[in-house]
Image 1 (cartoon, rainbow, N blue to C red):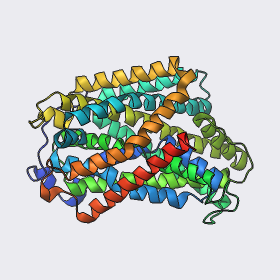
Image 2 (cartoon, one colour; image 1 turned 60 degrees about the vertical axis):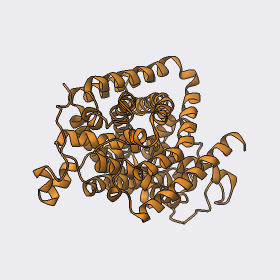
Image 3 (cartoon, rainbow, N blue to C red; image 1 turned 30 degrees about the vertical axis):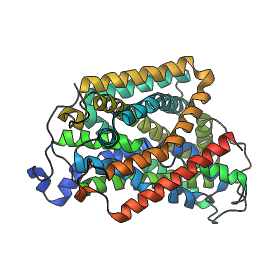
Image 4 (cartoon, one colour; image 1 turned 90 degrees about the vertical axis):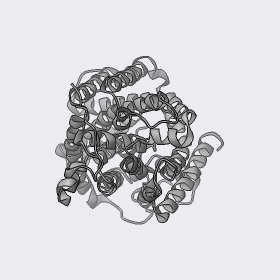
Length: 444
């Protein structure tokens, strides 16, 4: 079971890396699609759609601008992997020491379990409503978690990559169709007069902070992406060069931005200005979107939208259940060897399979326990995860920046001055968003 071990060579050493351009780039495709699969989740289905429902297309430009500004923060994950053959976790150790890695793991591992539980229960709610499955939310969520774990265990990175690409294709087609159906009803004013609040207002400010802070995803996904790059290299037996990494990442990143725009348009076209009370919970809101499509355009449109939303969420669940355990293992392996030494090859390229599956099982069990025994305080956990993500985002952005420019990267492999300036702008933006988020949550 699992992935076969191989030792990745550098792009210059492997004859496959000297193949004509298209085959090389196709072989490198994968981590960027996994990034898109993980990023396109509740932030898109709920936050982007709700932004369209409340503000029409008024927040669309701000959402796309935020995704653009954050580009270097996420891109440094696969870029670091291509330049060093290590993950960002190992880069943190070499640049800042084990204490930073340990603190990162202490903060992120509980958040990972909460995120898995939140995605699973939302996916279960939407899927149960769409398919009429007579199971309770926690039970169906557990079934989905187990099913995803079985898929990952059956084939490792290769099968996750293949299934994710299939899901991405389905969600892309259905989302584009659903968006096209909504287009005739969209008010394309820059900031519609029917928005729930003026552009310069406290309410709009709070909404912008909440939406922009988590678009296209939490910044820990940059670390997961570096590990997926190593897993892809291990599967292919060669390390992708920085051009291949960039092409792969750009496809996934641009795709996540376009899908975010689609969900804003869906909310603007079908829900905006209908004078309805929007559901507060993620599951209720997602099902409300489907019901409004049915009421507006007929049952067939509701099925298309339902498949789109369900596939988005299921893809996210599968990818985080593969990616988050990789981070957990990377943290422990980075802490487990001599601080002065380079990591062993297994730690660099990803991780012993037995340990990886043990981490996946542990996170899954924690998520299931949250679903069954802590649902009465579920929103407390969700708020904890959101606050934690908001607080550490600028810190992770800074860690990525200084790691990419640190001693573990040869001077010739470090980012150009313009990319570093872009990264500095992203760090400042994330810091402002985080401070604003904390202000509106606790002091306003």
